[in-house]
Length: 248
Image (cartoon, rainbow, N blue to C red; front, side, top):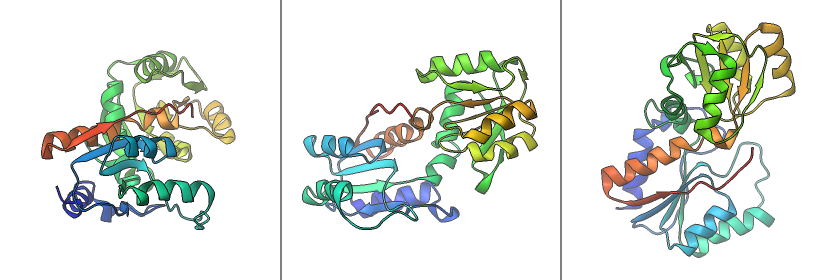
């Protein structure tokens, strides 16, 4: 498959034009024009790039790429080594941030909902990134967190009223703790995100709505994995997802 065709298809599929993002979506580093093998991961770390080089992949597809707004643009140190790995081996880097969080079926939030057994019924937050809906069963927040831990293979941090019955659950993967107040306003009995901030604890205690920090990496593994499966299914590409451990 031609690189330009692959990127154009993903740009359209993930509706890149809809989102105001913090980094460029789509093709970030151009490699060879023909793509047969794609290595997919959450973040374009050096470890992932080294695997791509060793495995002779044509492209790397990630959720967290490069060139973030406000970051130092000088190509030195870590940035130089990462870009050298791509450019010296003619490997493309393709990245989708907010579009991959928000996609209704392949996105991180959609996939986390499927994993947890939650049915999405509405959206909230900036650019409608947050999801709100129903859990499979009405249970106390502590039991919901325990079930999520089993599915993610990671113990989450639960703050607030662990006994509150959860009729409505809201979630937004990654670093979306800033949407907590909007989740409360939307009627959530529990809010789940990846990360937590100092002020989040006080809001959970004072509002009566518990908060679960389930891990930034842990909650954002599933969108890119779904895209890898989509590429195999749709185009017959050799697309492989690799989960590189990250405790955050």
